[in-house]
Image 1: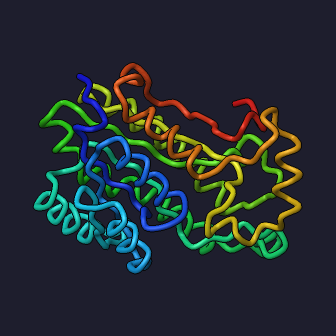
Image 2 (image 1 turned 30 degrees about the vertical axis):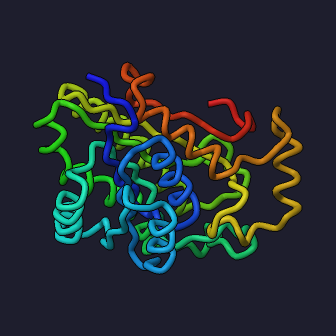
Length: 254
């Protein structure tokens, strides 16, 4: 079963700003109805949907909390109908600042667990909540957001990278279980993006170094990532599941 992007309702977790906002804009551009989830970024999320218009709306929820997710889906159902596509982009607070990162000798399990709770726990909560809807209609698309730091940990952000590695594993096991329901589950992994709130702390010289190392000679943008996310929701990817697409200008070969 395939459906055009313009026929879909899409939930973007952590969609109020940064990469999430670019993903929301990309789906909206293609005619989809977009539910923009936010946890704390109400002002940014409401400004985004005001700019996009009536096919977009903002919904607050902590995606690690099943009760909040259920209430959010009730509100989305009332506005657009339940989501056909889940883009799990939500990220626990994080800044890509190599100088301020938690080094291995003083990294705590609490820091690791905080990243895992949002990356993997948020994906689990949202997928569980949407699985009955996906099963009923025999169709669903789940896209998770990863990182090329798993292939090239040029800066050892232990907590963030470990959480994204676990999310990739969960993406693949979920693809195996949900496939018979007509659901594909894939990951899109970016490099350092120019520029999001998380990468704003990265020195400009680092962007230039990365650009010089890529075959395309430039750093990936949030818009580049967002367009790759569209592929996994579109009919063209109907036979693709359990995959990790690296979008970083060819910096690493996955």
